[in-house]
Length: 106
Image 1 (cartoon, rainbow, N blue to C red):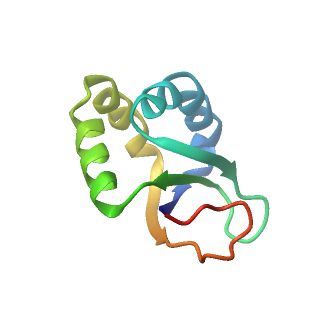
Image 2 (cartoon, helix red, strand yellow):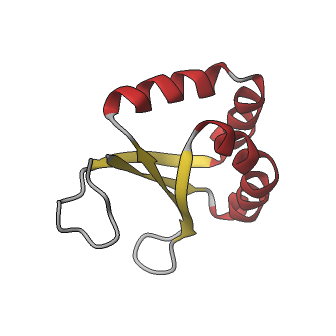
Image 3 (cartoon, helix red, strand yellow):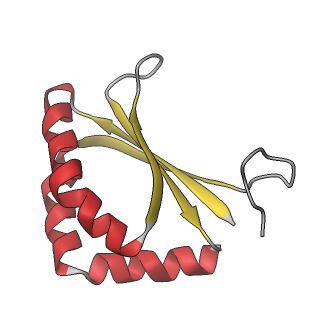
């Protein structure tokens, strides 16, 4: 089991529009393909960020699922709408320790 922490820095005037698109269009298509366990915005430190946490069975399953996601016409339309709103994207792969609370390491 691995996790992916994806951070998107958004143009300040685009945050509300991005959140609306995520809720109405992005979430349904992402839920068809991936397990997104958290979506949050930054309240301190670096601002104007939306942060997603995804759970994956393995790197291999992540690669396959993301490939299928990007072949989905609904996902392509969603990405086309939101990508211009991003100033920056960052992805960090996390591997939980065996003693992490509430985490099953497989």
